[in-house]
Image 1 (cartoon, rainbow, N blue to C red):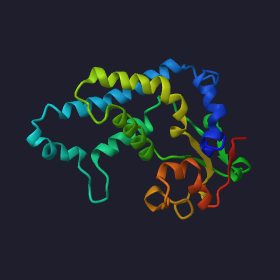
Image 2: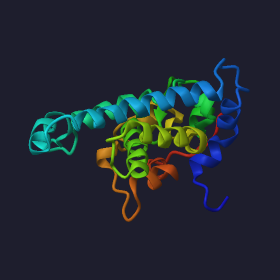
Image 3: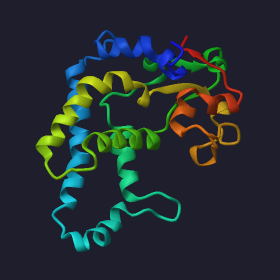
Image 4: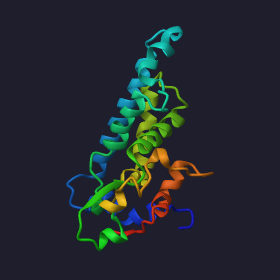
Length: 213
């Protein structure tokens, strides 16, 4: 377990049940795989569509969608956020389903909120980057890309369901004054993903996370 991140340790039991259709959600792993694969294919088709534009004009024309703003965002990243980070799974991994909560929220009678642990933007980027890496950035042949998508659905998805996990927090814990948003976090020498996987953004906010009770 030494190499397993904190979020993986806390969510493993519940997410395994969900994958094996033991959580009474009326959705099985083949349906989850189909949904995820469909979203990946929609993402891939967009890159394939770019290739219909003459190469000498492609960068300029596609910059309206793929070009970064001064804040480092883009319409593409915003779309990925929704397509893959928010809607990539087909089911809502609520704190109850994810199996995680802050210690205070577990014992609180006040209003609570759900917080996407990794963040939908980072989750979307992580998923897109994984497919980009597998196809080596080449989306010219969708039949070849589809094989990599199928591989992600069968071999990768089950072990990365935590990307969509949410945690139950109190209103006070979720306040921007206490819990830093992504743009405010400095992960130091770690990647942002590793930092959040080990719940260090919660630690910095003085939030203790445990199993949902």
